[in-house]
Length: 400
Image (cartoon, rainbow, N blue to C red):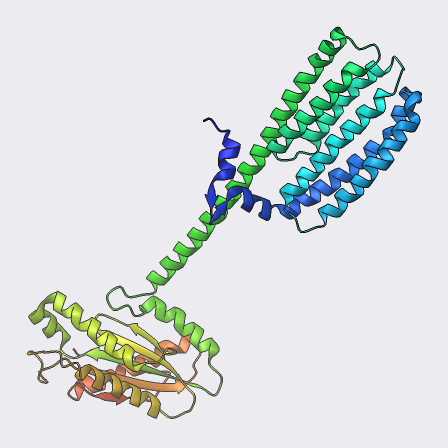
């Protein structure tokens, strides 16, 4: 069975509900504001038009005033009160359509009591209700169809009881009435469909923006992560260290621990790159196990790792303990390394601690820790050495 695209879109599922329900909820306030303004203007127009009734058909003055005031007046007050209730916007729009239809019926009843021959000319004004119902009020398309049906029933039932009406007059009226109904319904459908299309377009745009933001966040996270070990990389270190330095209080110190796998080139040559990768992953996990969530742990180079820690006192004891625990934890893995004098995979570590430095001084602190690492390597490896921070220190030579 054929279904108009507008109704197909309304019945689609979106975020666990139908488009119709989500559209009504999301656009409630906007549609209610527009509905309230239009209803106010229509009420003013409808009641002021009583003067036109009286001017053209003076013999219905009393009936017109009585019907409009006693029937449409209370309905209008009820309608505005209903707008303030916590009902769905679609029901409020339906209520406005019902009041317009009843307004049409009241106008038709008022004209039935006239014996003035001008009533036949004035009756063409009934098509204004069709315009109000479809173009001015702009309710959902389905309500426009229902309302138009009732307006046509009111008009073309009343028309036969007007004085002087005959078949020729009815045909002439239909010649204007039918195009008015068809064209205004087409306009209402186009408005309803276009409003829904723009709404869905905005929804899709928001979804795309959300997905794009998530993907950008993923890309940002991936760009800061070393794919082999899952630790931060040099880029992640630069970002996280800047955040850490911002959070550090003036009395805090920063400790840098640089860890290097002993004889790793020989390990890689003997056990292959796959074995070397597994070794680095195990060492990274061992380092992570002894660090806290507040520490910044990153893969600093090929077989080098770096830990950045905030220390709340001026002693180096905390950083030295951390470095030695890393060394011991790696040794406890007992990864076979026949090319090492220790028979297992070991690491050397260099430590340097200083008062919280400005960001441009951090690299010099890292250089000092790297010098301490060089000392540990030079003295036999599998050990921890410390250097005091000196802003004029220069990079030492690496020893594998």
